[in-house]
Length: 324
Image 1 (cartoon, rainbow, N blue to C red):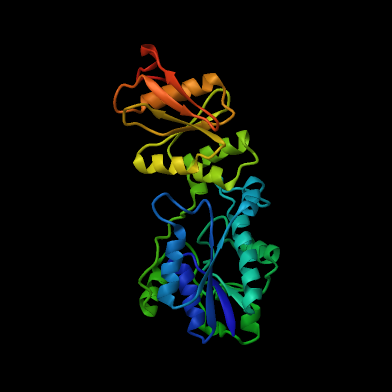
Image 2: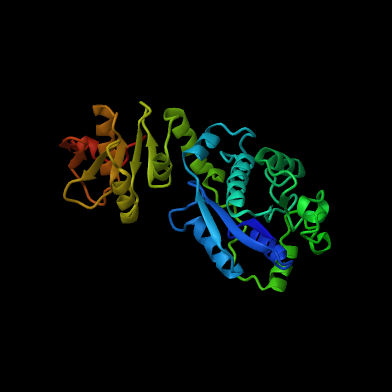
């Protein structure tokens, strides 16, 4: 008997998989790498890999692409407090996991969901919607809360003993931590959300992107994660690197769709502005570039797709109290 377990790297998903493995089921891990779940410092997928290694199971990673961005634009079930389409995101993951189940001929799916733990996606009604919309109704086993939910196909058919499942609910972590000690699960990430769409500042950037560039691509999302962001009165976006690491990332992401600015002969930031920017916007970007230089700068290099120019800033334009 085979089953697929959603693995996030957190404790709940590891426990869900382990509980079923203890009943003799061959479990395979599945995770989705979202463009919004990767911070600059740490890839969320590494947590899932570490968890799968500790469990001793194979992990398949699916990288969400442009199809997921369509969900972010128009989530069927709406947003949470910020720009997080949690329920639609969950359904997307379940649909992709169902495709993997079919590929390896697995019989059911395991999740680490706990009834009432997350307000948007782990309510009873939300779980029912996810089961229905994913096409997996009756085939999703939630071992940590199973005794509080209707019996699933694996329980009804005797593949899994319901008596060996649990009735955990709510936001307290004590029951899970006790089980982790019992099963010897030591490596897991903290229960913090980890999704950039739940963060107010990133959500503000995301709203601006959706307003001014509704046909945004994955590359645009990567740019949202880096640097200081300014939206000029014309609607043009300016991005300024805050350190050498961000400068290098901006250089890698620049491409033909961006104009690059750099201070001449002094240390300073890499600045990107959209290729459609007019001369006034480019000059404003040059002033912003000057603002964030460690030393006074009079000349800014501007690199476009087909040519290079130098902007010479007047003394009155090189003040550090430029207000946007």
